[in-house]
Length: 386
Ligand code: CAA
Image 1: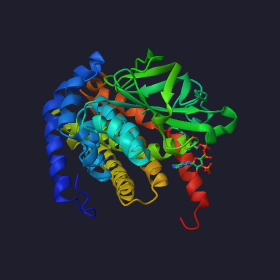
Image 2 (image 1 turned 120 degrees about the vertical axis):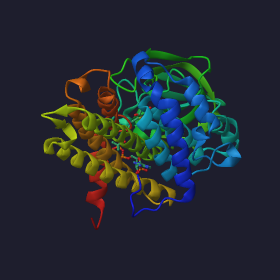
Image 3 (image 1 turned 180 degrees about the horizontal axis):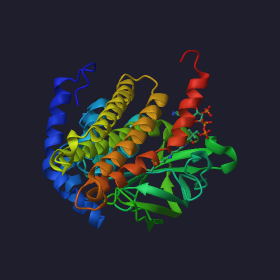
Image 4 (image 1 turned 60 degrees about the horizontal axis):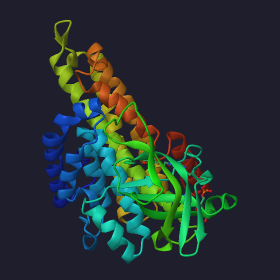
């Protein structure tokens, strides 16, 4: 994991060691069952809350661990190397739900909403996408109409990670679709609010232990005090939140890819063909060379984006590059890891097929690879120097 040129602090190294031990001892042995049963790993999330991992970047005054974003990425890699379902629950909660409250909420809102999430007592979700708007996030049609001291929300949100299990939802809705992205507002919402219900729950190819559902809002009354930022700030809040979220998904891709390489390595050192372990065949060795090179290149991009975020510097392009490259590297790595396993890789006796399925979503959620390319190209074309 050490990249040589980027020195981790003693604290970062210690946290990585602790989380790796926890992830390998407590999570990895359950990963196949969580996937097979499509079971939300409630007991693991509770343990992670007790370890301070559910408010990892949140200031201690609001119940968090106050660690930096590089540590968030390092921890994300460790958790995802054990179980990608657990990894995305961690990532959606920390980046997408705690993230916008940390950056945009008032002190009172943080005390009321963020602190219980950061302490691991409540689980968060982020409700931006809709049945008719995913990549074109500004085209959302869920409405919030102001009536006196509250807003009335109507609409359906789609593909919501932690949708079924969450307690607190960061909601994006529009005052007027004619205003396009300038009409979008952000709210923090208690899932138990009357009129808010869980709709269709998805059955997915991978990350099967993480709940993904619709959230349906029918005349949901939200006090003005639950708006995050001001009227019309919502789109910027969503976009800036996704910058951080993309680093988390890139770290997820790293974790899955690393686990796939490790599994393929132990298989290749055991399995013999033509009188020797397959790891001694050059055709297989070339796979390992390409897999490891892509993993380490991806890790450099992920760490760079996280370090820029820690320094308070712009990192939109770098987060998009990290997610694009890491997710496509993970696709390549998991495919080759499965190939190295031959027929065994296609059956669920080995983890290769789970890694292959889990990895695929990293190229889709929190902005598809095509959206990342739009974000990167727009920045490159505006830059005076490449
Ligand atoms: N940070 C802050 N503000 C930003 C921003 C950023 N990263 N990116 C754009 N903005 C601002 C712009 O400055 C602009 O503001 P002004 O009007 O004041 O100038 C405004 O937002 C509109 O920007 P664009 O014109 O670039 O917006 P657009 O409509 O063309 O969309 C897009 C740009 C990049 C394609 C965007 O729609 C996008 O990222 N789409 C993908 C959405 C996405 O990732 N969805 C995933 C949802 S979460 C999920 O996956 C589920 C889960 O639970 C895990």
